[in-house]
Image 1 (spheres, rainbow, N blue to C red):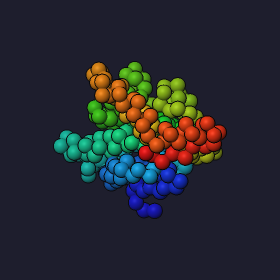
Image 2 (image 1 turned 180 degrees about the horizontal axis):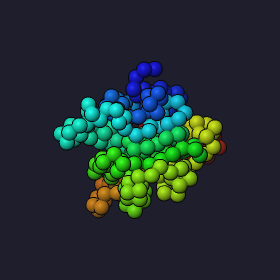
Image 3 (image 1 turned 60 degrees about the vertical axis):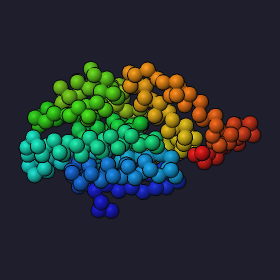
Image 4 (image 1 turned 180 degrees about the vertical axis):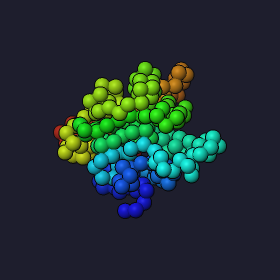
Length: 259
């Protein structure tokens, strides 16, 4: 497919592909725009259970920004500000997706690619994958909205280490830093990612959505309201709760319907 970002759906699992393998899926304006639109479209689809994000080919998730585009699209403060809004919107759309999201990482996961992966719920990496945000070597700043995702994931100290040193490091160090959840052999990354997606998809989708929203809310320092606390018990009024308990008692696999 020639689209800069496209998606396919199989068994309630959507796969979103960053599609510029000839440039290691380096991110350009069209890709950021399409990623945001795609994630909003998938977020609205109640038939989905999981979204997997990956890069086309086997050499990169995304190797950062397409530097060749800078002279045309980001050559001034005003142009960079407008472009930055596109990046922020795309990353926000990934992070706001109601469905569980998994980044399947092999090869380079650099700069904006790392930001996209960081916005996902889970990150699985092949053992030869590489990570980093070397924007200091370009004289470019990671904007607040982008930096917030990284700091939220790994903490201030690790985020600053990544940015200040501007070096590229391997998958096992990424796991030590909390950037990835799991490192597997390169030839097993696809199998393990979709096995993970299958396990998640087998769970109650409303419960997954609640857990995602609750985890985001807990990052907000405001005290929880009584209404918010009560929502933690709303699952007991769902059809999926009835189905789950019945299946447990009957020692069968539950078939959840998202209601």
